[in-house]
Image (cartoon, rainbow over all chains, first blue to last red; front, side, top):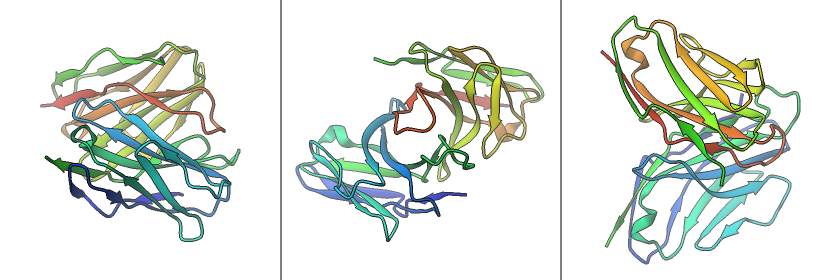
Length: 119
Length: 114
C-alpha cells in the first residue's frame, strides 16, 4: 500500500517570504498523481497544485510551485511571497493511476502541516 | 463550480445511536468518497463508491457502512456510534477514478459521540 509522510507538523513564515513544505511517499507504481491541498479554518479542502508523475517538469500555479523528485519519492511545496491568507493546514496526497491496483482512484493523504504566516 | 454538500455540519449523538451522514454532489460525478480526519493522522478513507449501488472498503471501514442509491447522493452510516468515532467526516467526489481529475470536497461534518 502507498504511504505519504509529512514530517513537519507545523511551519511558520513571515509575510512576503518563502516557505517550503516537505512530503515524501512510498510506492512501487510508476504511474500516479501527486497533489497539495490546502485546508483553511473553514475546513473546505482546496486543491493547490497537481503533478503528474510522468511529467518531469515541476508544476507551478502562481506563487505555488513544487519540487518533484521521482527517484527520491519527494514532493515538496514552495510558497513564494507568502500572504496572510496562505495560513492553513496543507496536505500532500497521492493517487494511483494504475487500473486494477488496490489504490486505484483513491487519494492517500499525509498527516498534514499547519502553516502559520506572521505579519 | 462543483458543489459537494454535507447537510449536517455539527452533530452530537449518544453512544449506541444510529447516525446518518449525508452527502450530495451536483456535477454527475461517478465517484464519491468518505474520509475521516483526525489530528496527526490526516485524512483516512472509510469507503468509496465508483457507481450507483457499488461500494468498496477503504482503509478504515470497521464500524461504518455506506449507501448509494442515487448517483448524486452518498450516505455514511454508523450503525452503533461509539466515542472513538468522534471526528470530522469529509465527503468528496470526482468525475472518474483513473485520471488526474480533481477530487472535490465538502465542508465536513463534525460528529461528537457522547
